[in-house]
Figure 1: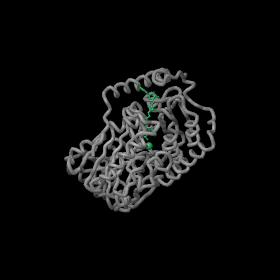
Figure 2: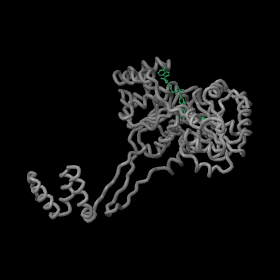
Figure 3: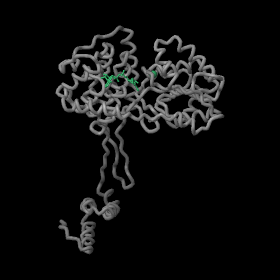
Length: 445
Ligand SMILES: NC(=O)c1ccc[n+]([C@@H]2O[C@H](COP(=O)([O-])OP(=O)(O)OC[C@H]3O[C@@H](n4cnc5c(N)ncnc54)[C@H](O)[C@@H]3O)[C@@H](O)[C@H]2O)c1
Ligand SMILES: [Zn+2]
């Protein structure tokens, strides 16, 4: 088959070379890092003044600090738009509630209680990207989690001008403050705080390379959720797949932007040829054709595997943001995939449903980071505390072991803090041991 697309054949090529071609870990360039570093430094040093200057410079919008914060009531959009937003919100809220982490405890070996407690964060920042169209779903895939978690202050930032539908969605989802600020400077404002914005404890949400690099550099000073990059989809298809659907899913993720990545893995030469033909046909009519063409040229890979197992094995290693399983037995196949951000099972699960409204957040790990990172989830809006509760008898049971650790690590006060609680015998023993070793005697009550 001749094609202008990159097609890799597992029966002909070295598998390790194919693996190499699928590798794509994002590393920020020194220029990008430097540029973001200087933006952050400006905001840290000059606060609101820097925010106004940078907004003029990068967004071409003149705002005074008094205009950053949007306080007016949101204008409700058309009923059909309201309905779509409400639908998504309903699903996301339910998903958020169901995935809420629960406090729990158990008895350990010596009978003491140990457990975990989850407290909602106090104040979080949510970045909503600007972009060529209002990314309403981005607001709906973040803010409701914070709200359901019980976060009291939810601060949304988005580049000016904030589209009225986006503003409505933010308010409806539960944002308590909304600022017309974008880029690395908005992230800096959330982290450092300025006269007009109080700092937050954690920053959430996707954005372009400047936004993500700002989050990376500020990590530690504030908490951040994850560092999402350009969108990705991988489809694993067997001979039962409908080429028309598969092509539609690949094109849907391709239109996100010129850096999006699309990958098809199939063991069927026929399906591969049909999907390529369908892509050609469907791309023709897409309004974002130029973006799609760029992705097809630079970031599309088609892999013909020897069997389904090989496809599932390779895709788990690729660890895509989205994985669509267009196979006869999607549940069985899902069990064979090691890592990815989200799995879409079966023919009737377009990735777009997850992008807009299914329930789980669409903010997912990209660039292969799904091998170790999670997408945005409910637990990330909580701070976890561990709990430990001993009774006298439970403590007495392990006091000798605590004493042993204290001895090994040379931390006598540690050993004593357990010994004093469980009785004079243990303390007396410690004292005798100390005297034997010629250590200065300690006063024992
Ligand atoms: N992973 C996800 O869930 C998801 C969802 C939606 C969007 N996104 C991503 O969000 C991004 C949207 O990007 P966007 O750029 O349209 O909006 P954005 O809001 O991320 O960035 C716009 C801001 O970038 C700043 N900026 C622009 N040019 C700059 C420059 N030369 N130097 C410094 N700062 C500059 C400006 O201040 C502007 O406000 C895309 O990359 C898309 O992939 C991801
Ligand atoms: Zn998408």
